[in-house]
Length: 183
Image 1 (tube, rainbow, N blue to C red):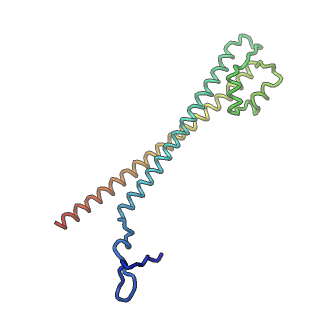
Image 2 (tube, rainbow, N blue to C red; image 1 turned 120 degrees about the vertical axis):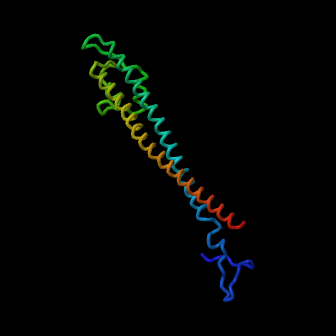
Image 3 (cartoon, one colour; image 1 turned 45 degrees about the vertical axis):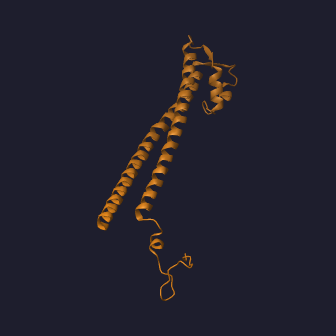
């Protein structure tokens, strides 16, 4: 990139543009650039951490809701007094499974219940409960893995913070040294 030449630009005796201290260091010190870089890294880590927290909150909600519906199915199963008894799924369970596309034995809840007259035996109810618990388990597993990622993000943030503090300390020492030399 060619420097902009105007009437204030220093020119050497040979007619060439003479570099100024500001053009050499681009008006910022190494420490300013370093601190800005560290600040950008810390901002990126903060955003990553916030994104992970948001995902974890969503998965926690999914795990809670799915487990709550599985508990409702277990309640229906508990009311079955004979092996051949059948029970109805609560509408909230059916709606939840439809809304979240939860499959039972590879089928949607409507396909699974088709031809059963709205009543399910204990084995069928167990399959529904198992599907809901699987969803809850996956969401919980995601959160456990995310906690490990979050720990790594926090460690990286802490390291970046320490590096920033070190750079600030070095800059302060250099400034003190320069001030002492001037006096």
